[in-house]
Length: 259
Image (cartoon, rainbow, N blue to C red; front, side, top):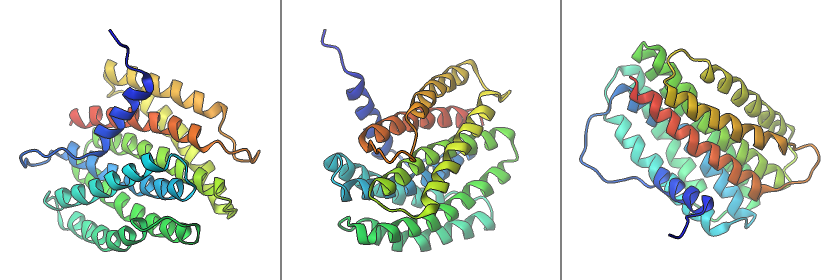
């Protein structure tokens, strides 16, 4: 029997993660809504990452497919979330996301070039903040400790792609000090949240096991995590962070299922 390589498995998982599956419309649960709203944060960062990746001609064809899948998924999930009626605050927050989505999409879907990269990033930051507000409002509406864990685990997905896009901006020779400080903050935030998740009393044995796996992936990534030496290895960093993304996406779904 021919063995399937780990690389092939990862590519399949990433494909499944970012290609929407057509299914009969069903009403979201609160856990699913927080999960999907949280995934929107990650997609803003992943789209920026793929834009910078394509602009530097790094695994261009893969990045192009990921960009399209991410843009399509954001639009599909936004439409789905707008049908999930919770309260007027959530409705208004989603309307703000819709307003910011259009200009971000128009920038991000264009042919990548260095002159536009920072504009894409700025528009993505505004969309990220608006998307995060939706998650916080849903978590509050849930009134549960598990809702907080879905939010926190989902934010780890975003941080993985935030680190990736900030790394790509630095490798593209952008020297703005905020990119380095934001990168260091993302690393610190991921590390802190991972510790909180691993000690959460709500964890099931399967969640504990999955988080132990992420800890191993994170420790391995941290060994080569250094922007200060000026030696950039974007392909390696992208692959490492994508593995963490896949793992955290699974864990977020596990927390959502507890609600």
